Structure formats: C-alpha cells, structure tokens
Length: 293
Image 1 (cartoon, rainbow, N blue to C red):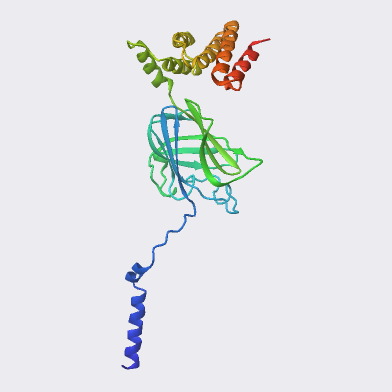
Image 2: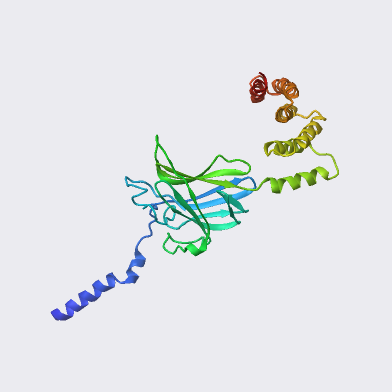
C-alpha cells in the first residue's frame, strides 16, 4: 500500500468514527434540568387550577433588572412559558377569564408589573409571543421581601378561601401577588335550595353544612338559623358544633343574649364529648368575650 492510499484509508476511517451513525452507540444519560419543571394543582372553591412551569434558581445572579430585564415580556419562569389552566371561569384582579388554558407572561418593573394571560398556551419562552392573542392584561404592585430571599422561582397559592385566593409569584426578594376570585355561591346556592325543597328528611350534617355556607357567605341568616335548629332537633352527635354555629349566627344577627346562651350550651356539650381541651371551649369563650362589654 503506497503512502497516498494509506492516508486516504486513515481519513476514511476517521470520518466513519465521527459519522452520525457512530453517536447511536453513545450511552443514554439523563441529566438534571437546570430549571426543574413543576406542576402545581390547587382547588379554590369548586374550581380546579393547574400551574405548569419551570423553576430557575438565583445562582448568585441579579434577577429582576438583571437576567430578567425590566420592561420586557418574560415567560414567567424558564423553558416553556408558564401555563395556567382553570376548570371554570375565574377573575384575576377583577378581570374575567373564561375556563381554559393560558400562557402566563409578565412584564417586570421596579414599581409595577404587567400580568398577561395569552390564549396560545404552549409556547417556548416568549419568543413567539403575540399581544393580539392576549385574553387579559393588567397591572399589579410587587412586594419586596426584607428578611428573606427565595432561591428558586416559586408560584404558590395563599390565603385560600371558598371564593378567592392569592396567586403569588415569588423569586429572590420579590413577591408579585395576583388576586383570584371564583363564583361559588352562584353554583352552590341553587343546589342547596333544591336539596332543601326535595321531599324526605335531611341529615344533621347536611343542615350544618348548608347553614355554615350561608353564614360564611353572608347570605340569608334566617334560613341558616332555621337549618341549624332543624339539625339540632334530633340531638345529633355534632350538637356542640352546631350550637357554636348557632351562636355565631345569632351574634351576627345582633342577638347577643341568645348567642351567649348557645355558646355556653356548646361548651358544656364539647367538654362532655371531647374533654376540657376541646377547641370549641376556647372558640366559645372567645365569642362570649367579644359580646360582653
């Protein structure tokens, strides 16, 4: 074999070594994600909410005003744009959002953030963001953390109630709160009324739940009181819980004497059922104290 032929053969063999097919022999390795994905599910009232996002870390960097510039559309996380899914219509900061899936974009600012819900729910980053596809766009005021810092970008639900919650975006020393509201009374009240109108005896537990719902949502207190009394008629096991609710309803109606009497009766039954350490003992005492001069 002459030197020229040897050189050509060597070059050919080297080329095969780096040919695309050669990489098929590379062992498969699963590397950890730089910004791990996260799926958060939360029910607020009767609405199921899902948040799918990635969680970048601070890693010694300047975050807002640094790697996340002020005044520019941000994917609100890393990798794919953060996706919010609502099973029913909701309100975000008073803005009506139909049920469905949306990309959550934000425009960070030092004193004000713009929150954007975009109907193109599956986008990589904000590179293809189109304002014409926005479903809602509004401003919120960020809060600065003074005594701690959050390393990994976090989305969380706080102050969860039957009909509302706070959706908080948190990273480094910044919290961006977004108020979320859902219509619970509009769905539950017709069901309660229909169930109450249906023939047949109702359980004491149902009377208790219905009365509690009306009390908590500032609905018809007379109905709530009637339902509590109906539930108490059979002297149920949860009588001390129902009597505490009765006391709360009477207090809200302005009947202080009736509320105190119901609270004291609740306390006596709670001690018999759960002992002196029952939480209803101190809850009743706290109510009584608030009603006395």
